[in-house]
Amino acid sequence: MNSLQTGFPRDADVIVVGGGGSGLASALSAAQKGLSVVLLERQSEIGGTTAMSVGSFTAAGTRFQKRKGFVDN
Image (cartoon, rainbow, N blue to C red):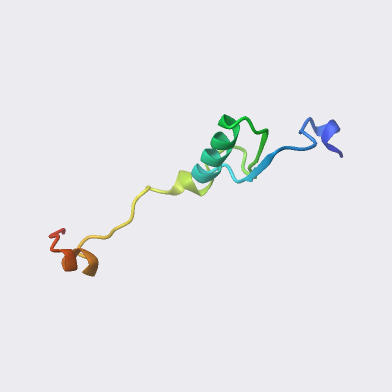
């Protein structure tokens, strides 16, 4: 099956693989610059592994904070 049969474009300025947070931001940035973009996502909905992320990591009381005198617990 070729791109004409599936309805997908034959070419693009930018091809982004993955519709998670980074992929979506990259696709948006390229499109805002006037580039043609194709975004490929294997799941039925966008989100990628970002959808499973809480968006944070634990870093309280690290040696870097202690070295700078930050009290964090």
